Amino acid sequence: MDGPPIKQGEIFGLASFVVGYIVTLVVVALGESDDISENLVEAAGWIYYNAQFANLQVTASAGGGSRTASFNYLTDSTLFSESVDAVSVPTVVYHLIPILVLVAAGVALANYVGARELSDGAIGGAMLAVGTVLPALLGTVIFSVETAGFGFTVTQSPALVPGVLLVGLLYPAVFGAIGGIISTEL
Image (cartoon, rainbow, N blue to C red):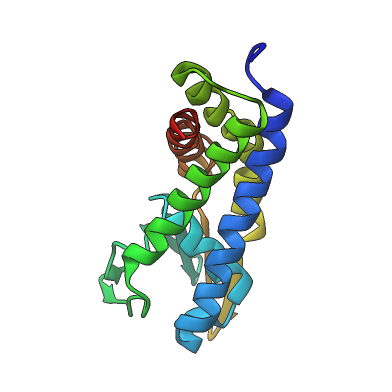
C-alpha cells in the first residue's frame, strides 16, 4: 500500500453508512410498532445512531419554556420521567448492524487496496471514517422531526457531537480497522 487509501475510504465509508442505515430501515419497518415507525425514515436514523451509542436530543417546548433531554431507544426506558416503550426487535440486532457492516466494509476496502500487512489492513480499514463523517453530520439534520400540537412542540434529532464522533469517526475507524486486519489474515 502506498499510503492511506483516502479516496477509497471516502467511497467505501459512504457506502457503509448507506448500507448500515438501509439495513436498519428494513428491520425497523418489519419489526417495530407503528408508534416508532410513524416517521419511518427518521426513526430508522435515530435507531441507527442509537445502535452506535449516539443519543437523540429531545426538546419539549410549551408556554415559552423548554426542556431538553438525551435519549436512546435501545438503552433508555424513560424520557422526562415518563416510561417509553422500548423497541420490539432485540436491541442486540440493532447494535450488530453497524458493527457487521463496518467490519465487512473494512475487509472489502483492505482487499480492494491490496493490504497484506496487519498495519496496512488496519490503516486501510480505518479510512472508512473519511467517508462516514459527512453523512453522520448530515444525518443529524436529515433525521430531525418536529411534532407540534395542543400548545407544545417536541423536536427529536441525533445529537450533533456524539453523532459525528461516534457514528462518523469512532465506530467506522475501529470496526473498519478490525475488518482491515481480518482481510490480511484471509
